Image 1 (cartoon, rainbow over the protein chains, first blue to last red):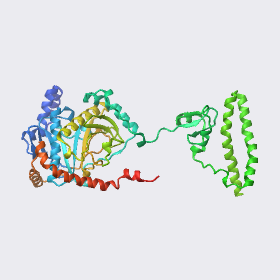
Image 2 (cartoon, helix red, strand yellow; image 1 turned 120 degrees about the horizontal axis):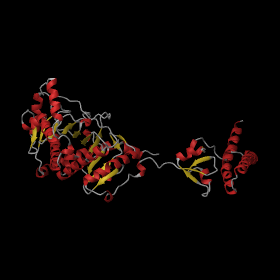
Image 3 (tube, chains in turn brown, blue; image 1 turned 45 degrees about the vertical axis):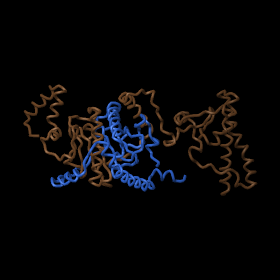
Image 4 (tube, rainbow over the protein chains, first blue to last red; image 1 turned 30 degrees about the vertical axis):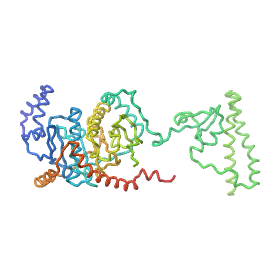
Amino acid sequence: MPQMTPEQQKELQERIKNMSPEELQEFQKQQCIFCQIIAGKVPAKKVYEDDKCVAVLDINPAAKGHLLLLPKEHYGIMPQIPEPILAHLAVASKHLSQLLLKSLRVDGTTIFVANGLAAGQKAQHFMIHLIPRKEDDNALPFEEKLVSKERQEKVKVAVENKLYQLLGVKKESIQLKLPQEDYFEEKPEIFITSNNAKRYHKEKCAFAQNINSEHRIEMTPEQVANSGKKPCTCITGEKIPLPAKTKTESELDNSKKTKPNKKASPAAKSTKKNSKSRITQKEEEEPEEEFEPEDEHKVDLDDIANLFR
Amino acid sequence: MNCEYCELRKSAVLYEDKDVAVIIKDMAVTPGQITVLPKQHFTILEMVPNELVEKCFIVANKVSIAIFEGLGSQGTNLVVQNGLSAGQTVPHFAIEVVPRKEEDGLNLQWQPKPLSEPELESLLSQLSEVKVDLNEKAEAKEKQEIKVKDEKTEMIVEKEGKNNYLLKSIRRTP
């Protein structure tokens, strides 16, 4: 384009402002280099031409043999193109891709369309890029990363209404297959606890299985965090020492002796607390269920420590 | 053959009819990427019948419009990776529709490699040797040739398959 003086530029901007959309489109056509190529006013290397489209060699190619497939009519972006023309362009790009494969002996092609400036569109004229590809030419980087299921769902929700409207289908008539669960992260974890328990457990934890179905409460990780309960060793990952198998008989006797003493103290505490907070008999039973195995661990720990002495 | 797109697994299906499916894959260059593909298995574009190619592109265009409006994108890219050397990862023809925003950090551009005038001339004559005919009839003649080519690609895919990370993770013993 010839250089313009600032005055001329201003004048032009004024003119563009006052134009109707039709006039603007006409103006764009006049300015469009590709429209001039199609009209034969600007020389270009035409590889293919029919009544609806033209394919030319790109003068700034990504690779040797890079083709531009242009509709003869001026369109800015793909959504403006009538379906029959688009269909024709699609078939043409298929055959031109085939041409590249055959005559350039490449083993792949990239078909690329940019709609809008943000997508890297440089010319005002819609075009389909056909790029012959060879292995490791890195002509077009396209690195895919993992997308979470939630984001996939969000995209679906955002796009589906408009898409169904465009495709002329009712939402109800479509079977929406949700992705199979096992390909994604497992279900949100559930922790088991009860009203009076001080700790919460994983589902498989022995303590959790000891809790009666009456008192059993299932909680999400968030609920558990707000409940003020402590995590069990099954969650913290601390090692629970092996049960008494390795112990000698005398040690077993020892542990039996120590057990009742230790057991008595928390039980006594709990009854004190209970009397203060007026907890009913039923609920009173339950903390004991939990305390029992925990105390056993304490004994085991002591015993094992003793072994080293 | 075990094809990820034929089974439509690992993806949320947005739309499907007897010919095409629109899916949201778990792999994308940017979240919001939507894939349009024929339901029947074709490895590369050249194998897909004209009518189906037309339909795929028309649906891809509608997906593109839906992305513009639904996701508030400022642009879209359509990408077909046709063949292994074009970066095709699944041996099933598909059109990727990528939503774009300014400064989204995506680099879907190429480094221009300008050619000299004689180079362009020789290229043009090279390309003129094969006649392009959009009719299906012309296609029928060439079908055999394509078949041979396709077997080659499939073999490569199979070879690659042994080093495929997906297969590796399946075979890995826990």
